[in-house]
Structures are given as structure tokens and as C-alpha cells.
Picture 1 (cartoon, rainbow, N blue to C red):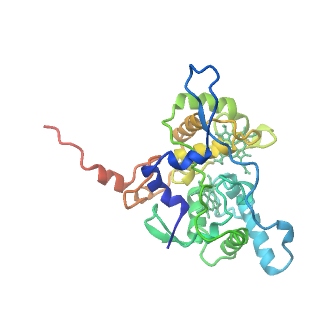
Picture 2 (spheres, rainbow, N blue to C red):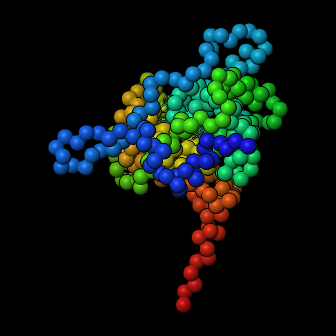
Picture 3 (cartoon, helix red, strand yellow):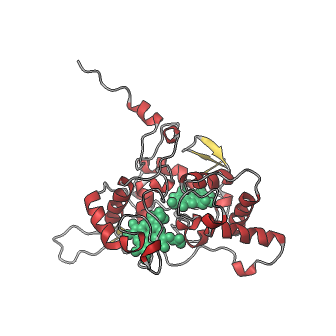
Length: 306
Ligand code: HEC
Ligand code: HEC
């Protein structure tokens, strides 16, 4: 049984928080010598992961299924209004059709499942992970097992992965920057400076702003739920560090990305029932937005007052 990249991470964080990152960390030169050197993680490369070219797809039924799967992932709300509950599409977070390094890539994903997932404490299939994002990232409903929609989405991901080796996609996980305790007041200021022009001053999304690349909502009812993987501080901070602002990626340093992430996650967003049952074995990562039952149990009963 292989382990999912995303689930072995919590164990890694506990063992060696910075060692893993060393390959990606650059230390900026300190000119005067009197100030502490600023450390930040190198931005994601500008290239895309190796995957087959879309131009090689034909008109046969296998190709049409792949193309339809891709269309569902990029125009999710328009194509599947009964299953998408917010204003996001799958590729709002799985950037460049799932081909972007550190952008929650799908290249290789079908080679990693089925796998044990610490968040559920069970073995999950690729279909389970797809439906988990329908529920928690799109605040919607799972696609029925055996449906053409689910089959086509799997067909796209399998085709995208066909040149990749089996197993984890080491080093490409999105939570690739240090977890730093956030200053949410500074995060709010930075959001106003660098994010609100596309995502709206109230994080409501930029559809009505008349900008070139309007961003989807970052909080409120149109956004992802508290149970989405994106609601983990380190994941959203790394995503922002590597990919935002959309037109100037790599501009936001590790600490600022953590501050903005802390601010975004302090804002209201849709809840997800049953989230307290996540990570049933008590191995929840340290950057979650909510407490699980297993964590509360491990902390023990509140101390009795004398
Ligand atoms: C709000 C952001 C967001 C949206 C929208 C979103 N996802 Fe995800 N998704 C994530 C994050 C974060 C992960 C965890 C990535 C990791 O563990 O490296 C993830 C994981 C996954 C995985 C498992 C990837 C792996 O490498 O194991 C699949 C498959 C997936 N999503 C499919 C979808 C589909 C299909 C949709 C649309 C219905 C979708 N996602 C929408 C954020 C999102
Ligand atoms: C130039 C416009 C622009 C700016 C500025 C910008 N974004 Fe985005 N952002 C986007 C777009 C566009 C997407 C979705 C990409 C897609 O659908 O292909 C996105 C996606 C996101 C997502 C994942 C989807 C979601 O809605 O949750 C997050 C999180 C995010 N941006 C945060 C930020 C933060 C934080 C900043 C400021 C540091 C920022 N963005 C600045 C345009 C922008």
C-alpha cells in the first residue's frame, strides 16, 4: 500500500520541519551585516510538469472522455451546477489544468491511489479524493459512483499521469514553506495591498471588479469550506507564496504569506458537518483550522478546580 503524499506530511512536519525544505530555501544576502538575513523559499518554477500534449487527443471515444473530464474541471460550476456549491472551479486551486509545480498538481495523481489517508484513517480511491474536493473545496455534493462525469474526470487525470512513475510525487506538495505563527493584523494590511484588487476588498471575489484576472472568493459563502485542504494555514500560505498575486507570483515572502493565510482563515467561511471526526488516529497536522475529537481526547479532561 502506498502512502498519499498529502497524508505522510503530518508525520514529516513533526519529525523534521525544516530539513525537507532545505532544497527550496534560499537565503537572501544581507548587505550591511547588522540585520538578520531574510529567508524565503524559492518560488515555484515557471515551467509546467511533463504531461502529454492536448493537441495529441483525437476524436475517438477515449479522447472525448478525457476532453470532457478537463472541461468539467475547468468549467465546474457551469457544467455541474447541482454538484458545485460555491464560486470556485477545480482549477481555481489545481492550477494550469493540474500541471503546475506546487500548484496542487494532478500529473501523477492516478498513480498514487488507492492509498491510506490519515485524514479519514481509511484507504481511499482517486474517486474518493475527487469527491472530497467536490464536498469540501467546492462546498457541493459528491458525484455518483459510476457516473459518466466521475469516469471522465478520472480519464483526464489518468491520461495526465501516464508518463509519470508510480508512487508519491516527492517535493511537489503545495505545503512547501515553513509554518510561521501569523500576524493577522499585518495579514489584513497585506491583503488590502496585494490581493483585494482581484479578490475584492471583502474577499468576495473579483467578478464585478472589471480586472483582467478576477480571482475567486477567498472567504464568505462563495468560498471553500473550513474542511478543505486549502483551509490549512501552511497549504494556503505556500499556495499564495508560489502562485499569488496571479500576475506577479513569487513576490510574497514566506512570513507575509503566513500572515495573509492567517488573516484569510480568520474570516468566516462555510462549515462542513462531521469535520471533528477527521484524523481519527490523533495525527492531525499542526496547521488545521479546527480541533478534532481525537485531539481533544489526547489533550485529556479539563483540570478539576480544587
Ligand atoms: C479551494 C482549493 C481547491 C479546490 C477548489 C479544489 N481542490 Fe482539490 N485539493 C486541494 C488541496 C489543497 C489538495 C491537497 C493537495 C496535496 O495534498 O498536495 C487537494 C487534493 C485533491 C486531490 C488529491 C491530489 C493528490 O495529489 O493526492 C484530487 C484528486 C483533487 N483535489 C481533485 C479536485 C477536484 C476534482 C476539484 C473540483 C471538484 C478540486 N480538487 C477542487 C484544493 C482544492
Ligand atoms: C491579478 C489578480 C490576482 C491577484 C492580485 C491575486 N490573485 Fe489570487 N487568484 C487569482 C486567480 C485568477 C485565481 C484562480 C486561478 C484560476 O482559476 O485559474 C486565484 C486563486 C487564488 C486562490 C485559490 C482559490 C480561492 O479562491 O481560494 C487563493 C487562496 C488566492 N488566489 C489568494 C490570493 C492572495 C492571498 C493574494 C494576495 C497576496 C492574491 N490571491 C492575489 C487572481 C489574483
